Image (cartoon, rainbow, N blue to C red; front, top):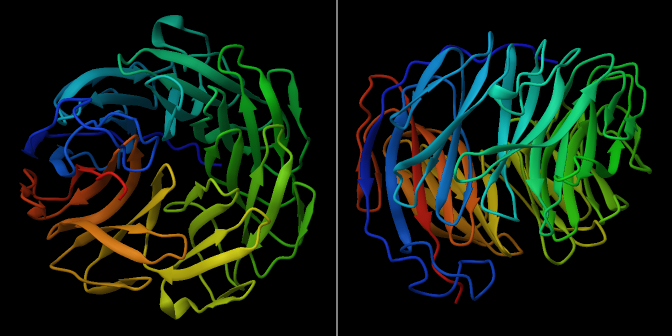
Length: 469
Protein backbone atom coordinates (compact mmCIF):
# COMPACT_ATOMS: atom_id res chain seq x y z
CA UNK A 1 0.00 0.00 0.00
CA UNK A 2 1.14 3.56 -0.62
CA UNK A 3 3.51 5.24 1.83
CA UNK A 4 3.82 8.51 -0.06
CA UNK A 5 3.49 11.68 2.02
CA UNK A 6 1.29 14.55 0.94
CA UNK A 7 3.08 16.96 -1.39
CA UNK A 8 4.22 20.37 -0.15
CA UNK A 9 1.37 22.84 -0.61
CA UNK A 10 1.41 26.49 -1.67
CA UNK A 11 -1.95 28.28 -1.57
CA UNK A 12 -3.83 31.49 -2.30
CA UNK A 13 -7.35 32.23 -1.08
CA UNK A 14 -10.23 34.45 -2.18
CA UNK A 15 -13.95 34.54 -1.38
CA UNK A 16 -15.86 35.23 -4.55
CA UNK A 17 -19.61 35.00 -4.33
CA UNK A 18 -22.36 34.53 -1.73
CA UNK A 19 -26.09 35.04 -1.58
CA UNK A 20 -28.24 36.13 1.36
CA UNK A 21 -29.36 33.62 3.99
CA UNK A 22 -32.48 32.99 5.97
CA UNK A 23 -31.92 32.82 9.70
CA UNK A 24 -31.61 29.27 10.96
CA UNK A 25 -35.07 28.05 11.90
CA UNK A 26 -36.92 30.57 9.70
CA UNK A 27 -38.65 27.82 7.73
CA UNK A 28 -39.29 24.11 8.11
CA UNK A 29 -38.34 21.30 5.73
CA UNK A 30 -34.88 19.96 5.19
CA UNK A 31 -34.73 18.78 1.61
CA UNK A 32 -34.83 15.12 2.52
CA UNK A 33 -34.21 14.61 6.23
CA UNK A 34 -36.87 14.89 8.90
CA UNK A 35 -39.72 17.17 7.86
CA UNK A 36 -39.49 19.31 11.01
CA UNK A 37 -35.74 20.06 10.77
CA UNK A 38 -35.01 23.80 10.51
CA UNK A 39 -33.64 25.36 7.35
CA UNK A 40 -29.97 26.30 7.35
CA UNK A 41 -30.26 28.85 4.54
CA UNK A 42 -31.92 29.76 1.27
CA UNK A 43 -32.78 27.32 -1.51
CA UNK A 44 -30.53 27.58 -4.56
CA UNK A 45 -26.85 28.56 -4.88
CA UNK A 46 -25.58 29.88 -1.53
CA UNK A 47 -21.92 30.52 -2.19
CA UNK A 48 -19.13 29.91 -4.67
CA UNK A 49 -15.59 30.43 -3.32
CA UNK A 50 -11.98 29.75 -4.16
CA UNK A 51 -10.25 27.72 -1.45
CA UNK A 52 -6.61 27.79 -2.55
CA UNK A 53 -4.16 26.94 -5.33
CA UNK A 54 -2.92 23.80 -3.60
CA UNK A 55 -2.32 20.91 -6.06
CA UNK A 56 -3.73 18.46 -3.48
CA UNK A 57 -7.50 18.16 -3.82
CA UNK A 58 -9.56 18.77 -0.66
CA UNK A 59 -11.85 16.35 1.16
CA UNK A 60 -15.16 17.76 2.38
CA UNK A 61 -18.05 16.86 4.69
CA UNK A 62 -20.44 18.81 6.89
CA UNK A 63 -23.83 19.38 8.44
CA UNK A 64 -26.16 22.18 9.52
CA UNK A 65 -24.95 24.35 6.65
CA UNK A 66 -21.32 24.16 7.80
CA UNK A 67 -18.64 22.52 5.64
CA UNK A 68 -15.33 21.09 6.81
CA UNK A 69 -12.48 21.33 4.31
CA UNK A 70 -9.43 19.12 4.79
CA UNK A 71 -6.12 19.19 2.92
CA UNK A 72 -2.86 17.32 3.38
CA UNK A 73 0.41 19.22 3.67
CA UNK A 74 3.98 19.17 4.88
CA UNK A 75 5.28 21.95 7.11
CA UNK A 76 2.81 24.78 6.55
CA UNK A 77 -0.25 25.64 4.50
CA UNK A 78 -2.96 28.27 4.18
CA UNK A 79 -6.52 27.02 3.62
CA UNK A 80 -9.43 29.45 3.17
CA UNK A 81 -7.26 32.24 4.53
CA UNK A 82 -6.26 30.24 7.61
CA UNK A 83 -2.54 29.63 8.17
CA UNK A 84 -1.78 26.17 9.58
CA UNK A 85 1.52 24.69 10.76
CA UNK A 86 2.30 20.99 11.04
CA UNK A 87 4.89 19.12 13.10
CA UNK A 88 4.99 15.82 11.18
CA UNK A 89 8.16 15.00 9.29
CA UNK A 90 6.28 13.72 6.23
CA UNK A 91 2.57 14.54 6.29
CA UNK A 92 0.09 16.53 8.38
CA UNK A 93 -3.58 17.20 7.63
CA UNK A 94 -5.23 20.57 8.11
CA UNK A 95 -8.98 21.09 8.59
CA UNK A 96 -10.94 24.35 8.40
CA UNK A 97 -14.63 24.67 9.25
CA UNK A 98 -16.64 27.12 7.14
CA UNK A 99 -19.74 28.75 8.57
CA UNK A 100 -23.01 28.67 6.56
CA UNK A 101 -21.89 31.72 4.55
CA UNK A 102 -18.59 30.14 3.51
CA UNK A 103 -16.36 32.06 5.94
CA UNK A 104 -13.62 30.26 7.89
CA UNK A 105 -14.74 29.78 11.50
CA UNK A 106 -12.38 27.33 13.24
CA UNK A 107 -9.43 25.14 12.34
CA UNK A 108 -7.14 22.36 13.54
CA UNK A 109 -4.15 20.29 12.43
CA UNK A 110 -4.20 16.49 12.62
CA UNK A 111 -0.57 15.77 13.35
CA UNK A 112 2.09 13.32 14.54
CA UNK A 113 5.87 13.12 14.74
CA UNK A 114 6.06 11.35 11.36
CA UNK A 115 2.82 11.00 9.36
CA UNK A 116 -0.85 11.78 9.90
CA UNK A 117 -2.44 11.27 6.50
CA UNK A 118 -6.22 11.62 6.25
CA UNK A 119 -7.81 10.13 3.15
CA UNK A 120 -11.49 11.10 3.53
CA UNK A 121 -14.04 12.93 5.66
CA UNK A 122 -17.43 11.49 6.60
CA UNK A 123 -20.41 12.77 8.54
CA UNK A 124 -21.18 11.89 12.14
CA UNK A 125 -24.94 11.62 12.63
CA UNK A 126 -24.81 12.30 16.38
CA UNK A 127 -23.38 15.68 17.38
CA UNK A 128 -22.14 18.39 15.06
CA UNK A 129 -18.87 16.95 13.80
CA UNK A 130 -17.20 15.09 10.96
CA UNK A 131 -15.11 11.93 10.91
CA UNK A 132 -11.59 11.80 9.51
CA UNK A 133 -10.30 8.46 8.17
CA UNK A 134 -6.66 7.72 7.40
CA UNK A 135 -3.52 6.43 9.03
CA UNK A 136 -0.87 7.43 11.54
CA UNK A 137 2.79 6.53 11.73
CA UNK A 138 4.75 7.84 14.67
CA UNK A 139 7.72 6.85 16.80
CA UNK A 140 6.18 8.14 20.02
CA UNK A 141 2.81 9.13 21.47
CA UNK A 142 2.73 12.93 21.65
CA UNK A 143 -0.53 14.16 23.26
CA UNK A 144 0.21 17.77 22.37
CA UNK A 145 -0.07 16.89 18.68
CA UNK A 146 -3.54 15.36 19.08
CA UNK A 147 -5.02 11.84 18.80
CA UNK A 148 -3.25 11.07 15.52
CA UNK A 149 0.13 11.19 17.33
CA UNK A 150 0.15 7.63 18.67
CA UNK A 151 3.14 5.32 18.80
CA UNK A 152 2.91 2.74 16.00
CA UNK A 153 5.09 -0.08 14.75
CA UNK A 154 3.96 0.58 11.17
CA UNK A 155 0.96 2.45 9.74
CA UNK A 156 -2.11 2.24 12.04
CA UNK A 157 -5.58 2.88 10.65
CA UNK A 158 -7.30 5.69 12.53
CA UNK A 159 -10.66 7.43 12.75
CA UNK A 160 -10.89 10.81 14.46
CA UNK A 161 -13.97 12.94 15.21
CA UNK A 162 -13.67 16.73 14.79
CA UNK A 163 -16.48 18.94 16.08
CA UNK A 164 -17.33 22.42 14.79
CA UNK A 165 -15.10 23.99 17.43
CA UNK A 166 -12.29 21.98 15.77
CA UNK A 167 -11.72 19.80 18.83
CA UNK A 168 -10.39 16.33 17.99
CA UNK A 169 -11.19 13.01 19.66
CA UNK A 170 -10.01 9.50 18.81
CA UNK A 171 -12.70 7.11 17.58
CA UNK A 172 -10.63 4.06 16.64
CA UNK A 173 -7.05 2.88 16.30
CA UNK A 174 -6.66 -0.23 14.12
CA UNK A 175 -3.25 -1.49 15.22
CA UNK A 176 -0.96 -2.94 12.57
CA UNK A 177 0.79 -6.32 12.68
CA UNK A 178 2.91 -7.17 10.75
CA UNK A 179 2.00 -5.03 7.70
CA UNK A 180 0.44 -1.58 7.36
CA UNK A 181 -3.21 -0.78 8.08
CA UNK A 182 -5.09 2.20 6.68
CA UNK A 183 -8.62 3.41 7.37
CA UNK A 184 -10.16 4.69 4.15
CA UNK A 185 -13.70 5.73 5.12
CA UNK A 186 -15.65 6.47 8.33
CA UNK A 187 -19.32 7.39 8.78
CA UNK A 188 -21.68 7.80 11.72
CA UNK A 189 -24.72 5.71 12.67
CA UNK A 190 -27.81 7.45 14.06
CA UNK A 191 -27.17 6.19 17.61
CA UNK A 192 -23.62 7.59 17.72
CA UNK A 193 -21.60 4.51 16.74
CA UNK A 194 -19.10 4.86 13.90
CA UNK A 195 -18.66 2.55 10.92
CA UNK A 196 -15.22 2.35 9.37
CA UNK A 197 -13.51 0.48 6.58
CA UNK A 198 -10.04 0.22 5.11
CA UNK A 199 -7.30 -2.23 4.21
CA UNK A 200 -4.86 -4.31 6.23
CA UNK A 201 -2.15 -6.91 5.71
CA UNK A 202 -0.96 -9.87 7.74
CA UNK A 203 -3.18 -9.24 10.75
CA UNK A 204 -4.16 -6.50 13.16
CA UNK A 205 -6.17 -5.54 16.23
CA UNK A 206 -9.15 -3.27 16.76
CA UNK A 207 -9.62 -3.14 20.50
CA UNK A 208 -10.24 -6.72 21.55
CA UNK A 209 -10.98 -7.95 18.00
CA UNK A 210 -8.27 -9.63 15.93
CA UNK A 211 -8.40 -9.34 12.14
CA UNK A 212 -7.90 -12.70 10.37
CA UNK A 213 -4.35 -13.54 9.32
CA UNK A 214 -3.61 -13.13 5.62
CA UNK A 215 -0.58 -13.45 3.38
CA UNK A 216 -1.37 -10.39 1.23
CA UNK A 217 -0.94 -6.79 2.34
CA UNK A 218 -4.23 -5.31 1.07
CA UNK A 219 -7.44 -6.87 2.41
CA UNK A 220 -10.63 -4.97 3.23
CA UNK A 221 -11.95 -4.77 6.79
CA UNK A 222 -15.23 -3.38 8.13
CA UNK A 223 -16.13 -2.51 11.72
CA UNK A 224 -18.70 -0.78 13.89
CA UNK A 225 -17.13 1.01 16.84
CA UNK A 226 -18.32 2.61 20.07
CA UNK A 227 -16.56 6.01 19.88
CA UNK A 228 -16.49 6.35 23.67
CA UNK A 229 -14.75 3.08 24.48
CA UNK A 230 -13.04 2.73 21.06
CA UNK A 231 -14.11 -0.94 21.14
CA UNK A 232 -15.79 -2.69 18.22
CA UNK A 233 -19.39 -3.86 18.27
CA UNK A 234 -18.25 -6.13 15.44
CA UNK A 235 -15.40 -6.41 12.96
CA UNK A 236 -15.26 -8.27 9.63
CA UNK A 237 -12.64 -8.86 6.98
CA UNK A 238 -12.19 -10.46 3.57
CA UNK A 239 -8.88 -12.27 3.18
CA UNK A 240 -7.16 -13.26 -0.05
CA UNK A 241 -3.78 -14.07 -1.51
CA UNK A 242 -4.36 -11.18 -3.93
CA UNK A 243 -4.79 -7.47 -3.18
CA UNK A 244 -8.36 -6.28 -2.60
CA UNK A 245 -9.53 -2.75 -1.91
CA UNK A 246 -12.12 -1.11 0.34
CA UNK A 247 -14.77 1.26 -0.98
CA UNK A 248 -17.14 3.88 0.45
CA UNK A 249 -19.72 3.10 3.14
CA UNK A 250 -23.08 4.60 4.11
CA UNK A 251 -25.15 3.84 7.25
CA UNK A 252 -28.95 3.74 7.36
CA UNK A 253 -30.07 3.62 10.98
CA UNK A 254 -28.32 0.54 12.35
CA UNK A 255 -27.71 -0.95 8.89
CA UNK A 256 -24.67 -0.32 6.72
CA UNK A 257 -24.09 -0.42 2.96
CA UNK A 258 -20.50 -1.10 1.93
CA UNK A 259 -18.50 -1.94 -1.16
CA UNK A 260 -15.03 -3.12 -2.10
CA UNK A 261 -13.17 -5.08 -4.74
CA UNK A 262 -12.16 -8.72 -5.15
CA UNK A 263 -10.08 -10.81 -7.57
CA UNK A 264 -11.03 -14.26 -8.83
CA UNK A 265 -13.85 -16.35 -7.43
CA UNK A 266 -14.13 -15.45 -3.76
CA UNK A 267 -16.31 -16.08 -0.72
CA UNK A 268 -17.12 -12.59 0.53
CA UNK A 269 -18.86 -12.35 3.92
CA UNK A 270 -20.15 -15.87 3.51
CA UNK A 271 -21.42 -15.51 -0.07
CA UNK A 272 -19.65 -17.18 -3.00
CA UNK A 273 -19.04 -14.56 -5.69
CA UNK A 274 -18.08 -15.41 -9.28
CA UNK A 275 -15.56 -13.11 -10.91
CA UNK A 276 -16.44 -11.60 -14.27
CA UNK A 277 -12.84 -10.70 -15.05
CA UNK A 278 -9.56 -9.50 -13.58
CA UNK A 279 -10.99 -7.57 -10.63
CA UNK A 280 -14.62 -7.01 -9.67
CA UNK A 281 -16.75 -5.14 -7.15
CA UNK A 282 -18.73 -6.51 -4.19
CA UNK A 283 -21.70 -4.69 -2.68
CA UNK A 284 -23.19 -5.67 0.69
CA UNK A 285 -25.69 -4.51 3.27
CA UNK A 286 -25.23 -5.45 6.95
CA UNK A 287 -27.56 -5.38 9.93
CA UNK A 288 -26.69 -3.91 13.35
CA UNK A 289 -24.74 -7.04 14.34
CA UNK A 290 -22.65 -7.16 11.17
CA UNK A 291 -24.68 -9.98 9.60
CA UNK A 292 -24.92 -9.57 5.82
CA UNK A 293 -28.45 -9.02 4.51
CA UNK A 294 -27.14 -9.52 0.97
CA UNK A 295 -23.83 -9.61 -0.92
CA UNK A 296 -23.67 -9.07 -4.68
CA UNK A 297 -20.94 -8.90 -7.33
CA UNK A 298 -20.66 -6.34 -10.11
CA UNK A 299 -17.99 -6.27 -12.78
CA UNK A 300 -16.78 -6.79 -16.31
CA UNK A 301 -14.11 -8.81 -18.07
CA UNK A 302 -11.56 -6.04 -17.39
CA UNK A 303 -9.98 -4.48 -14.29
CA UNK A 304 -12.69 -2.87 -12.15
CA UNK A 305 -12.49 -1.22 -8.73
CA UNK A 306 -14.27 1.09 -6.32
CA UNK A 307 -11.45 3.58 -5.94
CA UNK A 308 -11.56 7.26 -6.81
CA UNK A 309 -15.00 8.54 -7.72
CA UNK A 310 -17.12 5.67 -6.40
CA UNK A 311 -20.08 6.44 -4.13
CA UNK A 312 -22.71 4.43 -2.28
CA UNK A 313 -26.11 5.31 -0.80
CA UNK A 314 -28.01 3.25 1.79
CA UNK A 315 -31.71 3.52 0.96
CA UNK A 316 -34.46 3.38 3.58
CA UNK A 317 -36.20 0.49 1.78
CA UNK A 318 -33.35 -1.80 2.85
CA UNK A 319 -31.29 -1.55 -0.32
CA UNK A 320 -28.08 0.06 -1.56
CA UNK A 321 -27.34 2.24 -4.59
CA UNK A 322 -23.81 2.16 -6.01
CA UNK A 323 -22.03 4.33 -8.58
CA UNK A 324 -18.65 2.95 -9.63
CA UNK A 325 -16.33 3.11 -12.64
CA UNK A 326 -16.55 -0.21 -14.52
CA UNK A 327 -14.18 -0.56 -17.48
CA UNK A 328 -16.14 -3.05 -19.60
CA UNK A 329 -19.64 -4.25 -20.50
CA UNK A 330 -21.78 -5.21 -17.49
CA UNK A 331 -24.73 -7.57 -17.10
CA UNK A 332 -26.57 -7.53 -13.76
CA UNK A 333 -29.93 -9.32 -13.31
CA UNK A 334 -32.22 -8.00 -16.07
CA UNK A 335 -29.92 -5.12 -17.10
CA UNK A 336 -27.31 -5.02 -19.88
CA UNK A 337 -24.98 -2.02 -19.65
CA UNK A 338 -22.48 -1.65 -22.53
CA UNK A 339 -19.42 0.44 -21.77
CA UNK A 340 -20.16 2.63 -24.80
CA UNK A 341 -22.91 4.25 -22.73
CA UNK A 342 -20.43 5.68 -20.23
CA UNK A 343 -17.60 4.80 -17.83
CA UNK A 344 -19.67 4.70 -14.62
CA UNK A 345 -22.30 2.10 -13.71
CA UNK A 346 -25.10 3.14 -11.33
CA UNK A 347 -27.19 0.31 -9.84
CA UNK A 348 -29.97 0.33 -7.25
CA UNK A 349 -30.36 -2.91 -5.27
CA UNK A 350 -33.50 -3.65 -3.26
CA UNK A 351 -33.62 -5.22 0.21
CA UNK A 352 -33.05 -8.70 -1.23
CA UNK A 353 -30.06 -7.61 -3.30
CA UNK A 354 -31.89 -7.64 -6.65
CA UNK A 355 -31.06 -4.85 -9.11
CA UNK A 356 -34.20 -2.76 -9.69
CA UNK A 357 -32.67 0.11 -11.68
CA UNK A 358 -29.39 0.50 -13.57
CA UNK A 359 -27.81 3.01 -15.96
CA UNK A 360 -24.40 3.93 -17.39
CA UNK A 361 -23.28 7.52 -17.58
CA UNK A 362 -20.23 9.79 -17.23
CA UNK A 363 -18.12 10.30 -14.10
CA UNK A 364 -21.09 10.79 -11.78
CA UNK A 365 -21.01 10.97 -7.97
CA UNK A 366 -23.97 10.40 -5.64
CA UNK A 367 -25.08 11.86 -2.30
CA UNK A 368 -28.35 11.83 -0.38
CA UNK A 369 -30.37 13.90 2.04
CA UNK A 370 -32.73 11.47 3.72
CA UNK A 371 -34.43 9.51 0.93
CA UNK A 372 -33.62 12.09 -1.75
CA UNK A 373 -30.71 11.06 -3.96
CA UNK A 374 -28.64 13.58 -5.90
CA UNK A 375 -26.00 13.29 -8.59
CA UNK A 376 -23.18 15.52 -9.80
CA UNK A 377 -21.98 14.89 -13.37
CA UNK A 378 -19.00 16.61 -15.04
CA UNK A 379 -19.75 17.55 -18.63
CA UNK A 380 -17.81 19.25 -21.44
CA UNK A 381 -20.15 18.64 -24.39
CA UNK A 382 -23.64 17.14 -24.59
CA UNK A 383 -24.06 14.65 -21.73
CA UNK A 384 -26.80 12.28 -20.65
CA UNK A 385 -27.73 11.31 -17.10
CA UNK A 386 -30.43 8.70 -17.58
CA UNK A 387 -33.23 10.60 -19.37
CA UNK A 388 -31.70 14.05 -18.74
CA UNK A 389 -29.78 15.58 -21.64
CA UNK A 390 -27.46 18.49 -20.80
CA UNK A 391 -25.54 20.75 -23.19
CA UNK A 392 -22.40 22.13 -21.53
CA UNK A 393 -21.28 25.75 -21.84
CA UNK A 394 -17.65 24.89 -21.12
CA UNK A 395 -16.26 22.76 -18.32
CA UNK A 396 -19.48 22.22 -16.38
CA UNK A 397 -20.82 20.14 -13.48
CA UNK A 398 -24.56 19.50 -13.64
CA UNK A 399 -26.40 18.69 -10.39
CA UNK A 400 -29.59 16.65 -10.55
CA UNK A 401 -32.03 14.75 -8.37
CA UNK A 402 -32.67 11.06 -9.08
CA UNK A 403 -35.86 9.15 -8.38
CA UNK A 404 -35.79 5.39 -7.52
CA UNK A 405 -35.81 4.51 -11.24
CA UNK A 406 -33.02 7.04 -11.91
CA UNK A 407 -35.19 9.55 -13.75
CA UNK A 408 -33.10 12.71 -13.46
CA UNK A 409 -34.19 16.32 -12.89
CA UNK A 410 -31.62 19.11 -13.16
CA UNK A 411 -31.55 21.45 -10.18
CA UNK A 412 -28.33 23.45 -10.75
CA UNK A 413 -25.07 23.63 -12.69
CA UNK A 414 -21.56 24.98 -12.32
CA UNK A 415 -20.70 26.34 -15.75
CA UNK A 416 -17.65 27.49 -17.68
CA UNK A 417 -14.58 26.58 -15.67
CA UNK A 418 -15.41 23.62 -13.41
CA UNK A 419 -12.55 21.58 -14.81
CA UNK A 420 -12.61 18.59 -12.43
CA UNK A 421 -15.30 17.31 -10.09
CA UNK A 422 -13.56 16.41 -6.82
CA UNK A 423 -16.43 15.52 -4.49
CA UNK A 424 -20.18 15.83 -4.02
CA UNK A 425 -21.15 15.82 -0.33
CA UNK A 426 -24.49 16.01 1.45
CA UNK A 427 -24.59 18.70 4.14
CA UNK A 428 -27.63 17.72 6.16
CA UNK A 429 -30.35 18.67 6.50
CA UNK A 430 -30.77 20.74 3.33
CA UNK A 431 -27.61 21.44 1.35
CA UNK A 432 -25.14 19.92 -1.13
CA UNK A 433 -21.47 20.87 -1.28
CA UNK A 434 -19.44 20.47 -4.46
CA UNK A 435 -15.64 20.56 -4.38
CA UNK A 436 -14.06 21.07 -7.79
CA UNK A 437 -11.04 22.54 -9.51
CA UNK A 438 -11.65 25.78 -11.41
CA UNK A 439 -9.51 26.55 -14.43
CA UNK A 440 -11.47 29.53 -15.81
CA UNK A 441 -14.30 31.87 -14.80
CA UNK A 442 -17.17 29.80 -13.40
CA UNK A 443 -20.79 30.67 -12.72
CA UNK A 444 -23.27 29.13 -10.30
CA UNK A 445 -26.67 30.69 -10.75
CA UNK A 446 -26.14 34.41 -10.06
CA UNK A 447 -22.74 33.78 -8.45
CA UNK A 448 -19.41 33.92 -10.23
CA UNK A 449 -15.81 32.94 -9.54
CA UNK A 450 -12.65 34.03 -11.34
CA UNK A 451 -9.56 32.05 -10.28
CA UNK A 452 -6.73 34.16 -8.85
CA UNK A 453 -4.01 31.76 -10.02
CA UNK A 454 -3.12 30.86 -13.63
CA UNK A 455 -3.54 27.13 -13.06
CA UNK A 456 -6.51 25.23 -11.63
CA UNK A 457 -7.53 26.24 -8.10
CA UNK A 458 -9.52 24.34 -5.50
CA UNK A 459 -13.05 25.72 -5.26
CA UNK A 460 -16.23 25.01 -3.32
CA UNK A 461 -19.90 25.59 -4.06
CA UNK A 462 -22.81 25.19 -1.63
CA UNK A 463 -26.35 24.64 -2.90
CA UNK A 464 -29.47 24.83 -0.74
CA UNK A 465 -32.01 22.11 -1.54
CA UNK A 466 -35.66 23.14 -1.49
CA UNK A 467 -38.07 21.12 0.68
CA UNK A 468 -39.61 18.08 -0.95
CA UNK A 469 -42.98 18.76 -2.55
